[in-house]
Image (tube, rainbow, N blue to C red):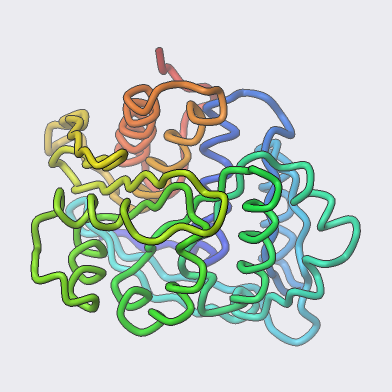
Length: 289
């Protein structure tokens, strides 16, 4: 059994790092979040710089940088988060010219569903900007409790999402709270892809991962499944960050205009690399073709 500390902001920040790692182009990604004025906050800033990610942090004067205890047993993990500053982001920071400039510059914008508990106003501002400027807006269901207890906030922003990511557990809870009366992941993915869209949006793609089972993708009224890279049990080190790594890998091909099949392959590759590492770490360079 091992334990370590990571930071709650790392979940979305890690996606930026994986995307940056896959692209191997410094400064290709930008990130905003909230940290405290302490040593963990300094670590976050240093790590972002080292990874080539442009990070604009809101630094809270009172709350410490969030931390998360990670317990890994047999490759599987449990998390206990102390959100602290990660729960204190304010839309005023987003609206500052130097920060909003990152939004205006971006062509693809990803926000985790966890942020619905922090600053839904910020999400709405970015979502509406993406819709008005023909940009790609992506969201993650993030956790069952988000789907269950933050449904109203989720419902407000989902019409703007061009891509919705999630895992099979989140998808089934999403289905349950909406009374869809199905636990079939393919059916749920199709229903998610067909939810109402904001004005101007043409279609939505739903991407649902299932651990070692095939990835489910629904678009244009059709469902496709893609196999993952199977890993011998003895090579499984730590599943922490696998879902975020998948999204980062997926995005690395999406931003290059690659096919959905290529996006899923890259996502599976990145996730496969991460689960063979201890903690949210990765080799110096990817070996993806």
